[in-house]
Image (cartoon, rainbow, N blue to C red; front, side, top):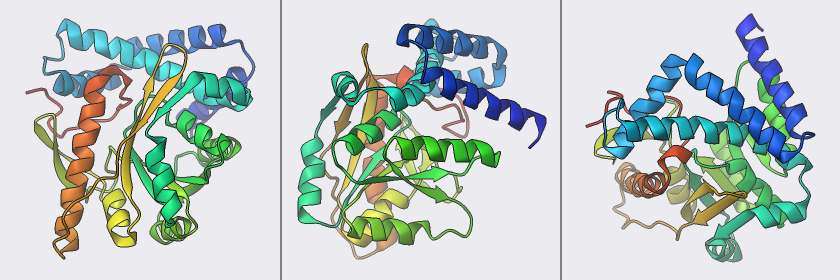
Length: 297
């Protein structure tokens, strides 16, 4: 573990320990302050967020509307980090009070048929809160997690999300992730996939906000291969907590060509992501370049 990795890991450990113990008002204030400092210190990351939001909002990065959204984005990201760890010590009745959900009947209908359900989400709001709510209400759910460096940071997140009631499938070289997910669907799990960023460079080209970008093929391929319904969900930050919206299962007319069908279904996923991000641009935690040019139209 090099120095920067150790610093990042110790910061996560501190955030975990404090968030589970300090009062909510103090936790929100502290993480807000930390990420305001990050906004000013991390110029490259700030420029990336500005470019992403410029594309979403249709204004230049230096415009007041984009600058305001960027500040709010950093604030909400700080809140995410406090709340994801605070969930561990939050009583179930408080989780229910803070969490709203629309469209859970789409999950229930799919599970009633057997064969599981796939939910694709963008990096919005607090997806850990959604997973925790599902676990508290008796849903068997699993999520795929990118393996992080250092290993200690990944182990921390693994313990954390398991403590929230989630089953985590690590995404790593040599792992049969697809086979594991197929087995979990056969056991009637809800599979949640945060799927608004392609990590392989081999994703499906879609159009979002008037420009092409890549989305992972996994959700569509898994759905078309297994017959499990694919719903798009999004989590929005509210004044007191979070609101989750789960859409109806997406469908395409099958052509008999898997590549064509995956592309068509992934474009529908991208369109649904676009609608959700449009509703709350600053709630989109996209801190990597979302488009190759990184510029607004």
